[in-house]
Amino acid sequence: MTGSKKSKQPNTKKSKSVRPIFSVWPWLSNLFAALVWSLIFVVLLVGYFSIDLPNVYEIVKETSRAPTVLVKDRKGVDIARVGELYGDTVNIGDLTPAVIAAVLSIEDRRFYNHIGIDPIGLVRAFIANIRAGRVVQGGSTITQQVAKNLFLTPERTMARKIKEALLAVWLERTFSKDEILSLYLNRVYFGSGLYGIDAAAFAYFQRKPSELSIYQSAMIAGIVKA
Image (cartoon, rainbow, N blue to C red; front, side, top):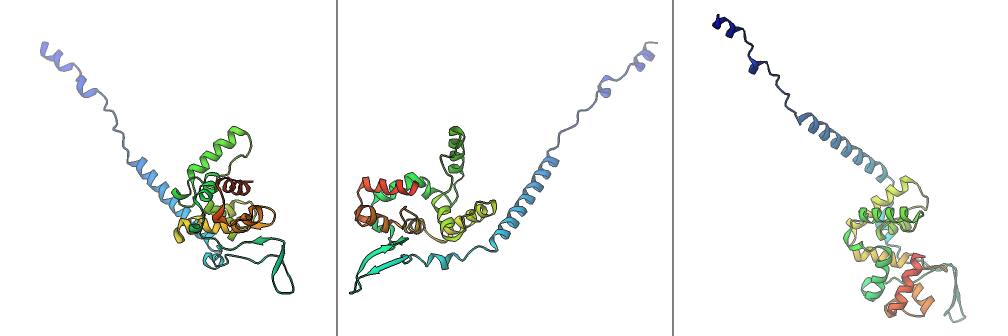
């Protein structure tokens, strides 16, 4: 009797349900597929917007332009310039450290640390604009401004911004930082029809860029920002 009762008792160890083991393979597989498709999308996007990008080398060769109207006396000496004025090309080595520091501190503090576009600068500008409730900072780097001013139209569209970013990265891969900064300073608008730091230094202070004081350098940089 006792033996039969013992045989009827259920085996509790075998009846316990086995918990399913979590597998990470499906999650990793989906993640890998998403990364591959994202990469394909980026490549196609870059290829599409790179089709009609301008020839960087040809445009960079045009380092100076003539003024709109040049008035000379009977001996051929320049006595007046009217209209937009482009100064002589200035190399970075000819500028004082004060000029370079003033421009970079206002326009692009991380110029020597980014690849043409600056995600950190974009985030900083976004936060500053949200706090102020209006646009008080821009996220464009000096390289992006060179790309925009020299190669692209002034329209504000997503397509133009993508081309601007692509050109900025291409400029960084093609030219040195000093060459890009030189392009910027020689072509940026300084107000009153003046383009380039040479024209601005002479018009505002009757000096060469290499002769600007710390105060004058700060004023020049402020004019660009304005």
